[in-house]
Image (tube, rainbow, N blue to C red; front, top):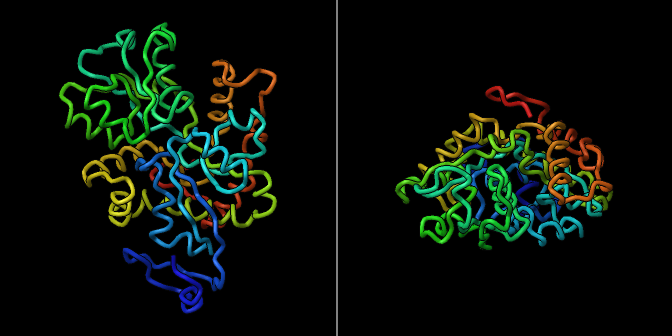
Length: 339
């Protein structure tokens, strides 16, 4: 990160990749840990890397340390949020279970993943007795999604074998035949269809759960109260980064390639999918209907006791998100995407 002398030296500078950003004097950048849900990240998760590389964090006087967690529902990620040591992915289940924190920004209100299977699996019923991914562990996104896919065929979790693995093992594990059902992001769908003949999409997550709310950042109540401006400005920088994915493709592709360790063609394919389907937010990223549906679905699945049901405002601190949008230049619509 650039240190104080550089911030004091210029008010308008050309940042990496030729992006000109107006800066206010910032003698002491505020430090913050920003979590990323997957190690290495998928394309959808790369806002923090873009915000750092293109100077959006610096613009908002934030010095961000990016931490990769192995799954957005990972206990380490939730613990970091609860302890006030990081702004990271925060599921509503953790809040319902008593974590003193709230969601402050919706990175991606819609899920981009597809559930991918080998050639001999034609329907969800064919997954009975198969080895399915539990990347990130039991309770992680792949396990939860696998459970929903089985349920769509009248099957139970016990009807398949869930294989716990690191999130980085999803694609190679499927290609090698170690798992036979896995939720993959667009770039990995692109790669797997090149690497494994017959591999195909069984169903899209949006078809299985049309109102599912995918990825939200959260912060501890204590952090929001004590470092309100820092939380707001950190989110504002990432909002600008998401907007850059829509508007400045050529600038973000090399950054995303480095962060994800994926080839250019796969990254570009994923960007097309994410932007054409409004997967990435350009504003607050919260859709009340999605948050409420997903919360009720967690109750229906037994992940949250009915007596611990929360309201939208108990899950979301919309004020922080709205202030972050203002700090990022106000509301905007890009390619009909407005969440």
